[in-house]
Length: 293
Image 1 (cartoon, rainbow, N blue to C red):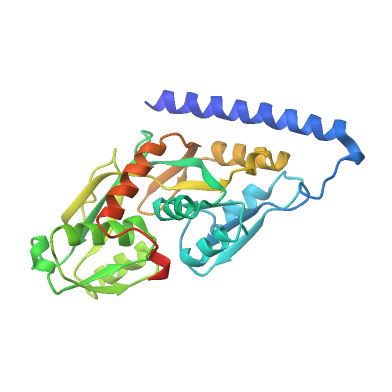
Image 2 (image 1 turned 60 degrees about the vertical axis):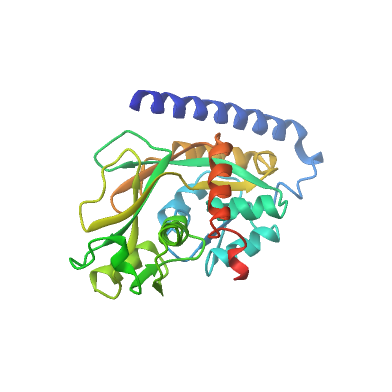
C-alpha cells in the first residue's frame, strides 16, 4: 500500500511537471504579442480563520515560492462567507467538503473537485481516503447515546462535516433531543468537553487508524470521504503558475492535521462516493442550503 501510494504520487508529479514545461515553452514562444491580461491575475485562494489547510502561514509561504505571480490568500470569517465568495467567483480554489460540493452542484457554479486529501495516523504511512466520525463523552455518567437527551453537545462551523453535520445526523437518527453549544473548530469542541462545558463532542480519525482511546465513543459512522480542494473548472489552464501550484500541493510533505494525523494530496477521482453521501445527508435533513438557515 505504501509503495503504491508513493508510485502514484511520483507519476502524478512527473505528469504535472511535463505540463508545466510545455506551458512555459508556449509562453516563451508567444512572447510579447500575447494578451497576458488573464494570466497576469494572481491565483486567489480562499480560506477561513478557523484551523484549516490554507490558513497555515508556513504553507502559504511554501506555495508562493518559485511562482511568477504571488498567490492572493483571502481570509473569510467562516465557511458560509467563503462559500458566498465562491458563488461570486471571487476565488480560484479552496479547501472544502460535501456542503460546498452540494452548493456547487445545486447552483451550477463553474467549480469542480481537483485534489483529494489522503490522511494517515502519525505512526503509519498507510493512507486513507475516508475517515470515521464518532460522538465522544468524557463524563462517566454518560454511558450510552440515550444519556445525551437534553444534554449540551458541542457543534462547530455549520458546514463542518465532522464537527456539525455528522453529529446532527447521528443524533437525529437516534431521536436524541439535545442542546447545542456553538464553537468555532473541532479543537474548541474538545476543549469544551475537557472543561465539562458539554457532555459530548465529535472526533474524527482516518479509516485505517484505531479509535481514539480518550473518552467513550457513543456513536460512530464509518467511511466518510475526505475533504477536497475545489477549483474553478478553467483553473488548470489559467497559466503556468496553475500547474506549478498543483505540483507543489501533490509533492508537499505529509502535514499535521490535528490529533497527530497527517495529510497529502492526490488527484480527485471518485465523485460517486461523494454524491452518495450528499444524497444520504440531504435526505436525512442535515445537509442543504445551510448558510441560509
